[in-house]
Length: 350
Image (tube, rainbow, N blue to C red):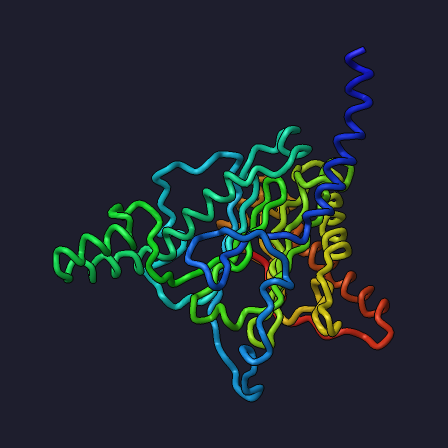
């Protein structure tokens, strides 16, 4: 009886997971532009679009921005309360305008997490850690200014702005705000921009592709985000591909890549002018736990590294086959469009 019950429940669980994923796949978490409270809003791309007046700029001007991108497979371990990621973020450098964080396995990839609804507690915790690290300098400067005020004013400011406790969320103006945070099972991508840049961010959107169990669940796959900075489109693809070093595992990873580039899509916008597919964007960044390997015995690989024989290593790098898959997808995309598509600019991998 128990076995029959399991057999009946399994398809129902999978169907329910797929349906729920589709219903909420366009939603993401972000800071409201007009709110000082962190990560309050579950929104979509339409709600964060700005008025035409706020985005008009001189098309002859070229703005230069620096982007920080990182990826980390956490292995299903929740972050400690005192975790300090300042060294990872290079917060001592104020030269970065956009921070993009990719995580894999923020929760253990067990059946309850894969088939159940996403637990936002862990992603919220990671976003709080990121917020504290990115805005720590602002908080310190705020508290320093308060110390220079009169005693009565000082107490009121500490109570109202800093809660009297530096470890709690500071209500002072923040250097960085979260424009997109999206989780799919263990994959999390979180994008943060400088406050003075956020008015020029438009058309934020997300697209999730599950390539795991039954070829559709989110234990493997990608969470992609896109947005426009001024008139330039960016797409960041956070992935967790199939693992394994056995024969056939590389093909499985390549199949994941092909599925991600084929199935990922974004809204075209009310005027149908926005990029829809990954390779339609001006700049594409691929990051994540790709699981590709060097197709050589470990001893041979180590020997080639000692000899600095990079050419031989590159010849056996499975990543090269992934590039072929992407370029084949690009050719197919060209064939699919009657009038061709924009050339691929700035594809990078982390």
